[in-house]
Image (cartoon, rainbow, N blue to C red):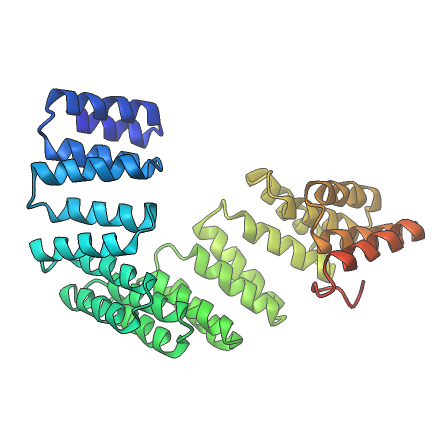
Length: 346
């Protein structure tokens, strides 16, 4: 019952109450390995890695046959204490207890990867995939490992395997698109994101990334349709509203809609400075120069090291006839970053 109450408190984001219920569970039965395991997991989540190690070891002493607790101890060594050798020992102990444990093999693979033992890591990823032939995640993990080593072709092949196993597994499509982008293959990226959007029942991120690529190719109408499709899936995706507004402002088209999109983005995420800059750029496109300057000045004040914000402000000042302010602002933009996208125009 205490475990259940702790879970409810966790879902309500009441950390103090979670801690209280777990401590009561331990008080009720100090010999409960499950209580010690959950308490160790809580400590791990709170960044108390040394205490978590001691608690997991106590749980193992109470139940030496628990491969799950060995895995938790290993994760604490690997991700918390940054001790891959000890993590390797714990993951191997878990595999000794349960040779078919996919999490243990995946954890061991990650530990070997940290130690730059490439071939051994690949072997463990492949073993995990063999043990779970209908699960796309082990092969996906292998693909990400290949990508981290700069082996993009092997990574793409592994991602294709993931989607062969599970045609609706969106993370593999997204990673495929990202890898094609890294190879500067925009058509390949667009195809991967598009396929992911069609395959998934939650395609928002795929449509967003597709819109970004299509916008980069100046396929404006297609980019707009991709962003709008993403918003149907996730109406709170403020980045899509922002990009729609910025595209429209840059092309000086659909400016009434652009103003609505920009304001909607800020309504959803008022703390994101880029959205305020975009609102200013929309006002500039609409000829509302005072409103444009006010918005972009706020963006610059909130993020003074962003060259593109100062560029936008310089353009607005120039349009207002404030040539000295414009020159100083554009010079500052170039001082911050000589290679930002609009640097030649600056």
